[in-house]
Image (tube, rainbow, N blue to C red; front, side):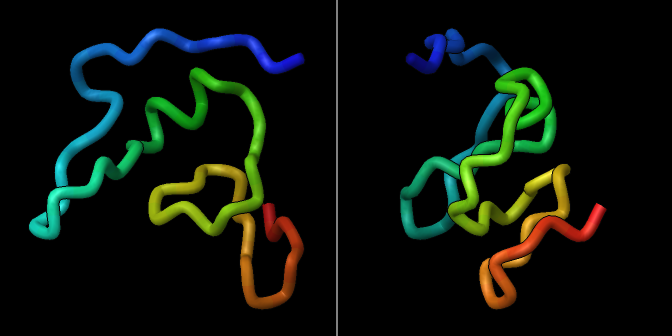
Length: 54
């Protein structure tokens, strides 16, 4: 079971389209890669190759 991380100031921003985009800070706080191809993934996940590059 995945633990719930409370969202704090600086964990995300709103894109021009109105979507939440999580920052690298949030991903590091969460502690794992969700393999969704996130824009600010600090783990180096590449959705095209389905691999972590770091």
